[in-house]
Image (tube, rainbow, N blue to C red; front, side, top):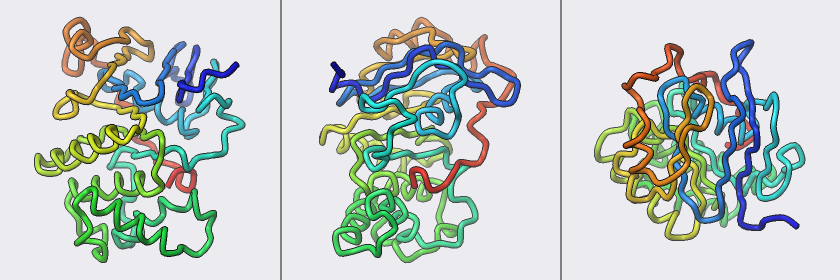
Length: 257
């Protein structure tokens, strides 16, 4: 009998980039309604773990299930909203803010011509992140914080049950951090399940139910955030890996736009 409350189940997960192992037997469970933060130094495997969940990095070992279905058979991607690292997403795309956000409806429209419900959803998503007044602007004209808001609106436009965000606060100004934190609070209050990759907890700390700390591709802590921060060295401490976090590769478009 399947556990209907388990949204993500990683068991013994291994992954590699080229010949270099990145994940080494990672176990991770995220249950419905939880907000889980993946913490760790650069190169610890945080971004690789979430990219494995959304199918951008293949597992070399272990098992992955989404909503109780093995990932290889999972097709209902509209249930998942993914926000990649801003440095790897939508860079240099000659598109308007509205067009980028509207692309997030493709998993629901199946490439059909968008209707009124789709246009309304785009407006609501932009309004949530405070960007409705910039809908016609080219994304190349936006600041880093505004660009991040657009990527989050794109993930929210399909009303996902699971929201996965990779470093949503990285390089974002304080005003945008506050907008993004408030947006996430609203999603959590509405019952969304959230998996976040974070370099530090920052303004999102009050929302976090559990922190999972990775070190050299292994889980070294899974529990309350304050305990994780207190017991395990985080970025800037003695276990910082000499390699950059491997999520800097280009993301695959069209899976979770």
